[in-house]
Length: 315
Image (cartoon, rainbow, N blue to C red; front, top):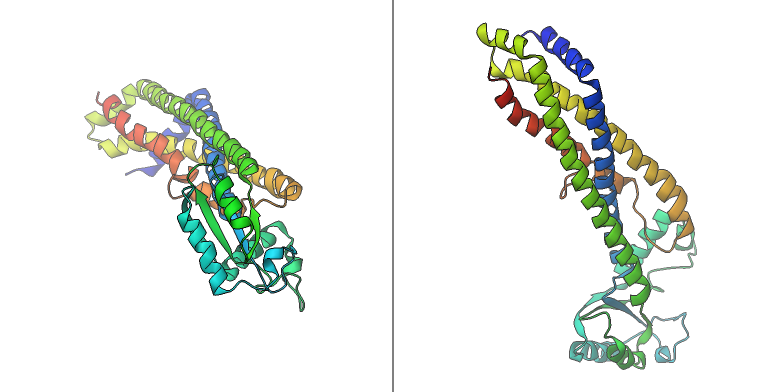
């Protein structure tokens, strides 16, 4: 196979259909950026859910040795087994509760410490005499509600029990946060889907025009016995170049959003929330399910190219 001819045809094809290729690249750029943004928002929702719970959960902090809240329920010091069994029975017997998970001191401390490191506020956790330690961190029950509108019964039942330091109920605030995240995530994915469909149509038109422009060359190559792969390869390389350009532009846009929008913006303004970092950015690029934009873009260009060139090169 003469690779010189293949690359010559690649340059010719890119130059001949430059406007069509630019249209495909720009459409891929916008659609892949929206798809990557949706992945980042989904990851942000997972981090927020892990750190703060969601609109269906309340957190029941249990008493520690030196309880900082000053709750009268902690007059006897750290919670004992009898108090914990009473709390567990109230949770199990409530018809407002769908389930509950016990979070140990170590688990809660690790989550808080990881979040503090993300936000650059880990000084209270570090040093020879840290302000926050595992011993001072409260164990907790993470209670999942059947409905976000029904929690008064379980809250009132637990609020006066010995061993309960504080009940953290952030349903209204978190409900708004997660509602906004859902709108942004699904909105970006819907817009991305329409634009990706437009990119597919543009890829199909580009292949059709390129094949018609080269129909004499393709006919001659058929007559001299050129293989289907040899004829198809310039089309595939054009699709790959287009996909690579779209990925580079979208990756740059997502990197700009991660640095200026998240690291230098929202993470500093709202330090109480966990925020996506560069490992999450890498996940948006490479992904798993849904696939990242690095795999999505070639699939959107190479697959239709393989399918359509089989039709258009039959001369």
